[in-house]
Amino acid sequence: MLQLKQIHKVFNEGTVDEKIAINNVSLSLNKGDFVTVVGSNGAGKSTLMNIISGKLQSDIGDILIHDQDVSSWSEQKRASLIGRVFQDPMAGTSPHLTIEENLAIAFNRTKKRTLAFGVTKKKRVFFKQQLEQLQLGLENRLDAKVGLLSGGERQALSLLMATFTEPRILLLDEHTAALDPSRAERITELTKEIVERLNLTTLMVTHNMQQALYLGNKLIMMDKGQIILQVEEEEKKSLTIEALLQEFQRIRGSQLTNDRALLV
Image 1: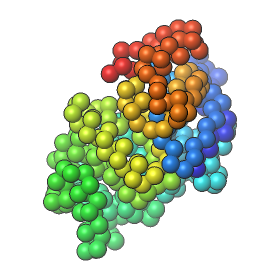
Image 2: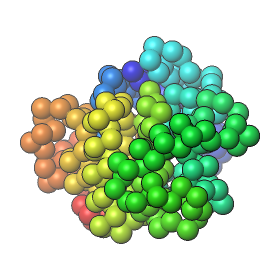
Image 3: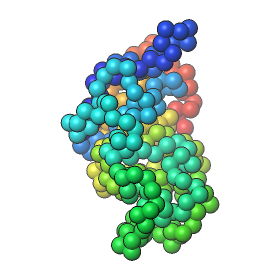
Image 4: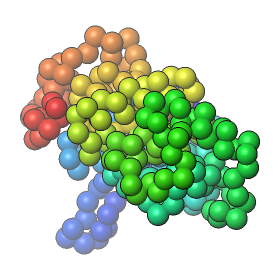
């Protein structure tokens, strides 16, 4: 479903600030795979997500989604195949528009972004049915401005907007990191339920190792722009945080510099 072939990205090439952000990364996800991505700050996790989404272009390498080469596609064109939820609850929604208007934009992600098409009665019923799954009462607040919602409510809405069109690929970029523990737990459970129900092919970056072990069927660890460890489904079932940290030390010969953040 998703193939990355020798992706390479350098920032500030040829200057004193040159940094290899992604170093010849290859990765293959099958339909329904849910891969969690861990690693220290600056490991290249978010850069990789930006390259997959088209926000950044890789210097070298190919990206295939459903056997279609999208390497040269713009971010807007790839949005027809990719859903994404960001760390910042403000990033995935338009605060000055209503819940209904935000949902309408997401529903028509493959078309020119305009509200001119309106919202039909049939679509409104569909929106309410989708919102009911969140169990937050948002189905009764379709006319509420999204800017008035709490961070957890906005992130739940962002997750719904990114998934209800059943994208080929779902990207989750530390999407619970900015929330308080109780709301983060709620969004984590919603993520698990929605991804399993829709059988979405998902790549999720997280600093929370417990979350990385709880969600998904596979795990990868990144460091210095490389994938240094890939854990398959059976091994992941019995993996512990301590074992994961020990594996990093075995591979790199040093401890993660921000172990405390990763253990939350």
